Length: 104
Image (cartoon, rainbow, N blue to C red; front, top):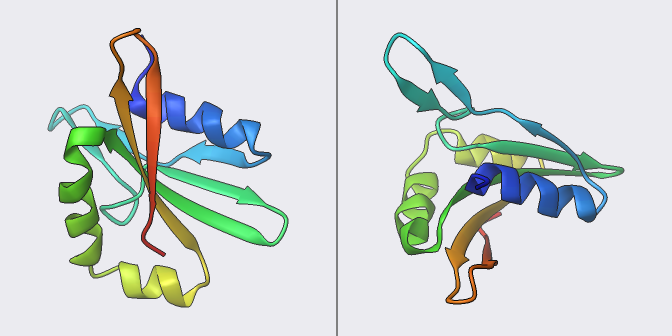
């Protein structure tokens, strides 16, 4: 089964983005760390940079709040980056659907 990060990466690549996973694993603390504390993926295509936070659909509001409270969000917006939150939900048919919120 793929993670929300892998599903979002594949989704963005289908839209023509070059995508890098910028979330890292700290083996010592056994925790994941996001770029600037809020970014899992960085996606680029000509004239556009998009930061993405991925999660489950049920956890989206907490992620949106975390982004709004971040010290880095003002600088990210000033740099002209877009910022989306991807929330994934598994349907009764076993397929995942994406809910996308623009918090740019």
